[in-house]
Every structure is written in C-alpha cells, then in structure tokens.
Length: 206
Figure 1: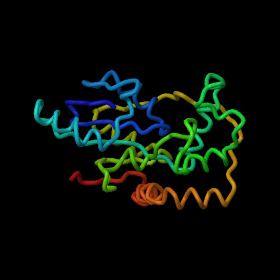
Figure 2: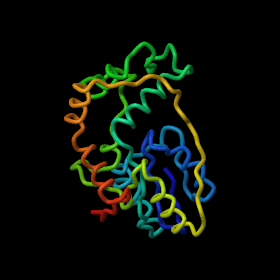
Figure 3: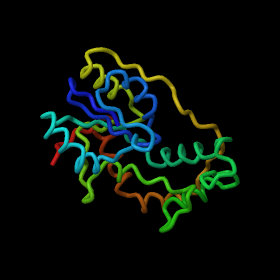
C-alpha cells in the first residue's frame, strides 16, 4: 500500500493484478510506504484503521485506487507464481498439481497452504460486501489507469514489467469453471461492473 499526500490518494495493492509494477513506478512519489507482509493491506483494514488515523493526524480523506483482474486469470496467475522453481519443496508449491485441482482447492472449505490465496472481492470490499475503493480499474484495460495516474500526478506514469510468472499449462475443465463462478459469484459480478463501466468503476465511500 502506498499513500500520496499531495494527490490525496492511496493505492490498495491487490495481489496478482500487476501491483508490483505499479508500486515500483509510484514508490518514489509516496509519502508512506507499506512493504513486505503489509504491502497487501485490504481496503476494509485501511478503511477501519488507517483512514481514521490519516484524517485525525493529517486531515486527509484520500481517494483510493486499486486494480481488479478477471477472476479466473487472477487465480491462474497465483497458480503459475507458486509453480516457480524457488517454491519447489515448500508447502506453497503447486508442483505436481494441475490447475484444475488448484482451483477446486482454492474454493474448498479448507484449502491447503498452496491454495490459500484469499480473494479480490475480500480485498476490495467491506465485511458487508460494499466496495471501499473510489477508483477501481480493470487489469485488462490499463489505459484507464494510466490516464488516471497521469492526471493525478501531473505527468505520465509508466509501470514496467515485474514478477512475471513462468508459463506452465493451466487448463480448466468446464465443470470446475462453473463451480468457480458459483463460489465466487460476487467477485465475477464486481469485475463485470468494472468492465461495463469501461474499465474504470467510480464508487462513493461510506
């Protein structure tokens, strides 16, 4: 998570949505930087704990922006990331596990460590399912985000390519795809709302 005082803006970093590239491009401009395990603070945690602090101490009520990725592709990115050579032999490795099995484990009631990836919907919403992001962008339509950042920062922002996962087969059976869509219907619906808005969904904060 990054906080920018002059722009009155906060970046909520959702895993596997290109966040590292955005973070690297914007970090020199940030006033407050959350890294390592605190990099991916959820919108709910920010809203409940950090936003009140910023308002009380600095008089800030910043906008919040984030990126959402097509849900199946975001999970596929997690799968490929955990197939990296560096992960081999660890409890987080997907070595020897098909993508189809991985998805079934992700949406199970008690996923093993390698399939414990959380959800984009949980990262972006309140406990009641309300979107806590003022500007939510689709990963698949980057122009909207780049235009937004250029306007807020007064200059072009050009994220590079970071943390590219290895290309490994990741096919999904149609029956499993239907189960995924049913299990994560709210996330698919939110992504559809963003796409229907042209890739940039504006939401009022509570």
